[in-house]
Image (cartoon, rainbow, N blue to C red):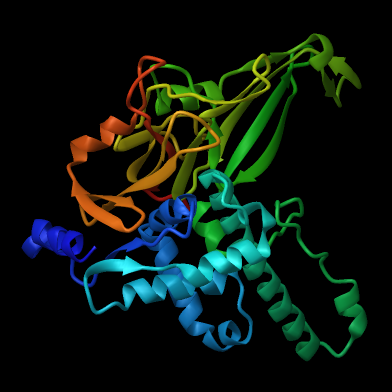
Length: 370
């Protein structure tokens, strides 16, 4: 990597961003799924900053108990405090902790990068919520002499936001959005809306489409009839209805997962969809509720699946940092042209030699999402 590192430094020259570090990650036998996601998260600046700020201000807690979040923060700190500008780091402690904690990631089989991202973000949320609850309980215990007050206090909120006042962590502030599921009874016209939170959006894909069209399909109106009729509270009976999903509150960081692995009944297995799906560098969200109409996002990272099938292959990531695009492939880091991003859209023919396809997209909002 020494040569590749110096090559990257030469390529950037005077434009090498002040204080930034570009380090490849060692692969511990099929850990590319982990490496590619970690690079995308490291260059998700709000996430990196919040994690490091949290870690340094809670160092005593972190020292006391190792968990996946402290291992991740430790890795990010290790990168950001390197004397060299480029090089290779072995995320050994993080990978060991991940395997110890979740048997899903223990084998040397090909893993799914999206499953890993989901698991990691939810794990960090769980750790932060537990700490917030513990702090709240301590505070209530010290400020209240009546044990009854605590016993009858607000019920512990669930992670999926079922209760009215869930604990909102900094992970939620960065990644969480709100979807609203609107169902309109076709008999009495009553609209029932149900909100649900999300940390990423999983979109069905079609051949020769775009993220915009996939989002439109996600929010398209669906008619509920026959066995799928909707129970209308006003009519007190099952009725035909129209249902659609809209984004009520867009997140600051929008993570889009393209459903490239589809279960094919006839084959009895999953197949990779190599469809060409255009993801723009600048994305305008149109399926939103006021006041967030036409909110704009900018692409800053792409996790790419390389390979023709779901059970084998490789993951790499493309990252935008300080207006430069970089290509991370485990230990190797190199600069790429912005125009090269479009080579990862997918293939317009089913059988193509190009098997490098965008799988998880990371967009940052250019406007207020508060």
